Image (cartoon, rainbow over all chains, first blue to last red; front, top):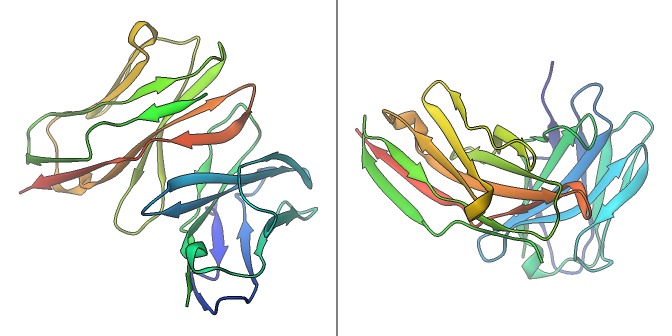
Length: 112
Length: 116
């Protein structure tokens, strides 16, 4: 089976812009979670989607949003980018809640 | 509140040495899950193991072994006969049934360097 894929792999944006990141889970996986990794805050949970519904949300401002499509692919959007949003954004998929999560290679976002 | 502590920030060992990475967790849930992930320089998190709170049995997989002790809230990871390819950052993580089993709380990671 193909692993989790994320596009784009690298992105450079300007403060104030918005960005959309995409994640395609492993075939058959219905849960997609997003994480932010920064040197200062480490790995932090953003949100989880399961069957097109947001099931859990981490402690991030409303500028961070996401959605999941009927084919389980997911997107996350960050509006009004700030310098502090520069990070590696990781997507993880799993069949459900009783299983381990498998991570994609991440999207490295740089905000200038 | 939940918390995962990896007190060892960086560890260096010479190839073929054994090394243990420590992980201490805090949770009020009785149903929870513990994980170890490896992050090589490429950046992708690689799943190593998942344990639920009701299964304290230790596990061995090749050169890797895990020691889960609820009495000390620890879930330590040992690499036997380390190899250069083991060099990476290792993360211990916790999820709780009450806050979402797919909501992982990560420790700060331990950077392991294996010197040839």
